[in-house]
Image 1 (cartoon, rainbow, N blue to C red):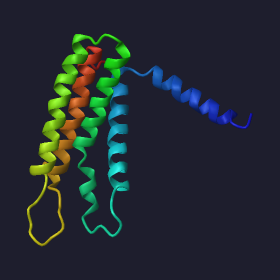
Image 2: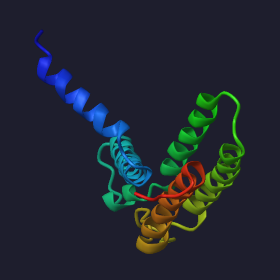
Image 3: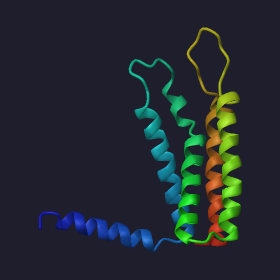
Image 4: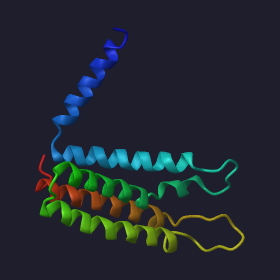
Length: 148
């Protein structure tokens, strides 16, 4: 059994993940979604791309897509969806569309002749916080509160 240490590590991670409170799970999931979104955008950069790398930190569409997939995974796992899950999907889909429009029209500076650059507050910080807030709103609806 060469993977005994790995099996022990996986068992410990599974035990920790299944015993998390909704608050800890929401923070962990939000951190995972943000990290995956940034890594995906960095991996998708073209070689010799001269745009600032800070542009890759604006990930509200990616985070909201992952949140929406979590909502639909919960709906399919439940068999017959509850009112809370359908409400979350009804909130998540317009939020996704809002973030797509936001990233397309609000997030960028218009400077002819220079590489595209995101606005720091309106293109990175505020949209990311709003996308994470949608995830927390889903957890609030799904689990009836975020009490630890």
